[in-house]
Structures are given as C-alpha cells and as structure tokens.
Image 1 (cartoon, one colour):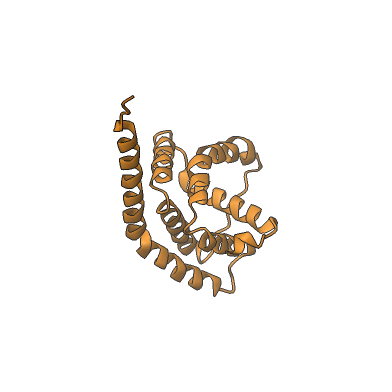
Image 2: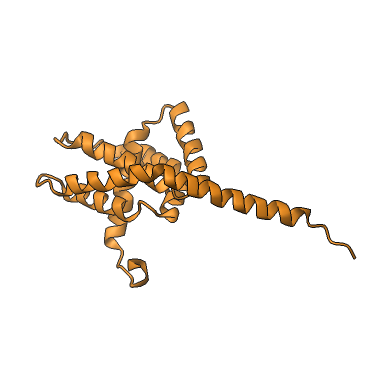
Length: 166
C-alpha cells in the first residue's frame, strides 16, 4: 500500500511558514512593545492617574506578549462593541477629560499592536473586525477603550494562580 505524502508536506509547510511569519511579526512589533513599557512607566508615575486607568496600564503590560489576549481581542471586539453600544450605552455616561487622555489613547494603541504581534492569525481576524467596524461607522476608538477597561477590571477581580505568575 503506497501512502501519499502530499498532505503531510503541505501541513508541515503551513506550520513552518506560520512560525516564520510569527517570528517576523514579533520582531517587527518589538519597538512598539518597548514603547509600551516606557509609556506605562510614564503613566504609572503620574499622581493623577485614576485607579481604572492604572489597572488598564498594568493589564496592558502583563498581556503585551499574550496570544490568548490577542485572540480575546480578535474575537471579542465586535460583540463587546455591540454590547456597549446597544445594551450598555443606555446610561449615557459622559467621558471626563483628563490631562493624560492623549497618552492613555497612545498606550491603548501600543497594547493592541503588542498583543497582535503575538499571533498573526489573531491579527488578521482583528483587522477584519476593525474593518467591519469602520465600514459600519462604529466608534471603534471608544469601543477599544471600553474593551480594555472591562478586561482589566475582570483581571483585577480574578485571583492569581501560581502557574500564571510564570
């Protein structure tokens, strides 16, 4: 009985290509990750940084290399926006202007770039979600901010395990 090695060769080639792509993307976003750390240090040294934003900064630093967080953002972005826009948006909370708003917005961008650098596939799914958001006139900047705030709040409430400290 003769076996065809074509599917095995294709599967191995796809895996090798993906690993190569992942290494290249990770190297490409490394400057953004270093900028993320600098921005985090700058923000955390501020005395006027709110507790909520302090949590977001710590959460962003902890998840800068997280593939699972990249997938969480890729899959959870549009449902999170829909929830905040349709269900959670009923309270009509007006965002408060702060002196560091531009810096925290830049930090949010760096968190997204850093996390997406850990998974090219998640980056592709996230970019498609973002494209859908832009094409349907979704205020994606605010949706991303609310998504990061929610995830940081959930992470702060969750007890830490010894295995997650590694």
